[in-house]
Length: 343
Length: 207
Image 1 (cartoon, rainbow over the protein chains, first blue to last red):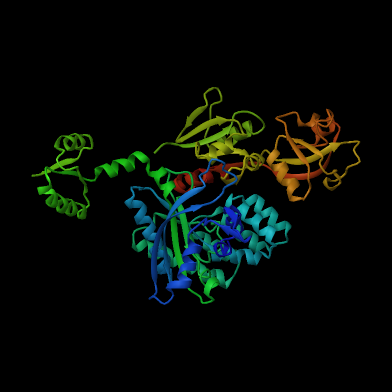
Image 2: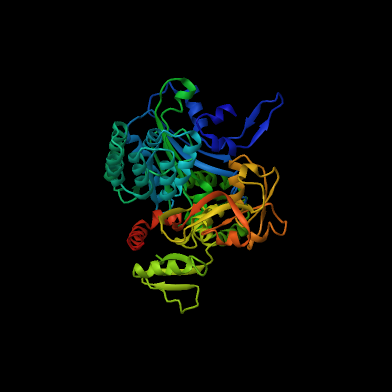
């Protein structure tokens, strides 16, 4: 459980399924994939040439108390880009995610972009206790600026910081950066804001400027994020389809050597719901399907080679039992497949 | 794409101020019609119970809604609160019978029974203070629960304190203060960003 818990934050650790093994140690099932990938990279892959580009499709299990009907096992498809500290890496993974969603047929996807570094720095400037930090996150995730302002003022926060948090709740788009910076004159936030502006410029080179919006109030549940974070949305699904971001300190927590990284995961179950089972079935059915029936074992070799050739070209090719021409005809008709007979 | 949908309370103390706000913003909803859905310009206005509106918005049945902050918290709806509309202010208090020796929540005996129509807010309030009480949910007329010995204390809304006095109850703590909010579905907020932003600006200017 220890290795799965590193850097993921209290919320996720609580939602993990846990069990005890025979010598009393607590073991846990993975609830997300980034920490396991980071561990793999730390132990086996650091000698390979950087940057590393990894991908996975894997099941994760987690427990959500608030939604009793929510499935506990989900499939995640994700990528990790490891070893590039630059904003070009953030732009690359966001572009890749949008390309993947577009390929899947989801056309009106919007991506919210935030920055964990800016948000953490604002929290540091507010000088709050850990309970108060959790409350601030609650207010920001509801964009409840009224409640947030009241709470920050009663905790004796500097008025500039209060105004900055108000802007975080109420203003979207790049102009929030100016508003935050005019409320708190902070060098670190100014540097991170430049990073965000550069990211949006890089994304515009790919024609993605209308797909992304800045929302500094975007909070992802995981603690390990250090920089640019993001979540994709579509009108066809009621919450984010997945999400990702930069986690420059996570690998260091395993090996003590700093290795910058960013990546994302899409929840396959959410994608299926957003695209629709029927649309997926239709797309699969669009693939050409061929049924090959050898009339005797004389033609078997040729049929085998033909099937291999077709499959190599992306066609679904199925070998029918030798000699059963009638059955092959019936099946081809039912499956709307092309029938090929080998003498 | 379908019209933007907004739910507003069909009755209760938030009903009239909501209609007035919309009228000031140039969106006059005719009350004469008894239908649940009324089209005003590019907006579909849906009449619903204030307590149900957080759920409508959470699941995206409507994009926006006007309802009380207390109801958003009670329903644990995962929504945005885009505007504090300024009306419908109220506070939620803990109250006990006037003659009770208890003068603060910390003096409530362990295991005291608390009647409320806001069980989630009440439970998390007492949990947050580390107090163990038994919360019982009642739908309405919470104030009579102590008289009937159903409960030792209540958690309920008290705007002026008049209802408390009439039922010979005294306030011993404020759980929260709330007002009417414009709430928004989290996906609509992103996928219909421009339309929503312009409506929010219109309402902000008409508050």
